Length: 121
Image 1: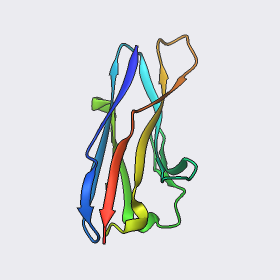
Image 2: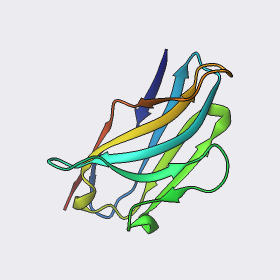
Image 3: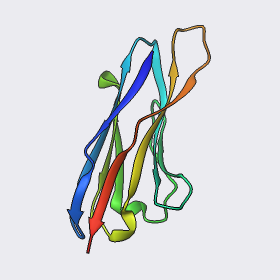
């Protein structure tokens, strides 16, 4: 069983910063790619950044200058730093990962439970 444990959300004033964390826990062989998504009320879930198991992240948000994703493979963790928060960033942020249960299985997709970020003006 694999779980993605997220933390770091909360309520902040506009202009502040937050660092979200996501760690894969459980029994598995390897975590392949990881990614961050967010879903604002009434909107679809959109990808913010994709982090391969090695190499550079790929950002899909046009505001990528305020977002920085990083990864610690030794901890099976991915992080999202958000700076200069604006009310538009208010959303539930989700972690996504492709996890291989053993060396012979194809990776399966997992989602975190989501962490709420609320930005007030």
